[in-house]
View 1 (cartoon, one colour):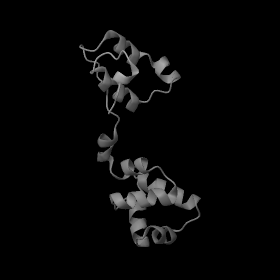
View 2: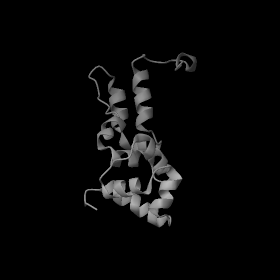
View 3: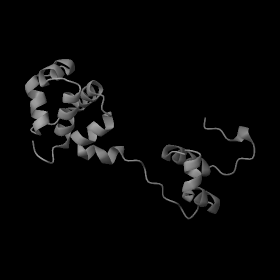
View 4: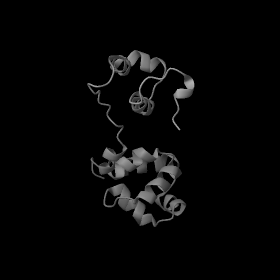
Length: 133
């Protein structure tokens, strides 16, 4: 195994931790044992469908396995970067930069993204004027 074959190392470690042979894992996910050996040795990359089956069988995060198998997918999975526009209100800019406040209320990046698009709608003076539908 090559040092750069993190996918193969992860698969082998998880498979062995679960007490599975290459043949047993192959049967569970519907491929030949030689295919598992090729993936673990770094000679093949699993297909997208196979990544999901392997992740589910071995109890590994699907995104983590996808990025290890297909590093080019990392750009597609990356969280969007929020750019502060000069046209946004100073209060919004202070809000998104207040990391302590965001952490206190567990505001996620996706929630910030949704909120940032609603900022463009203008001020909301009543709860009924704030609608996402």
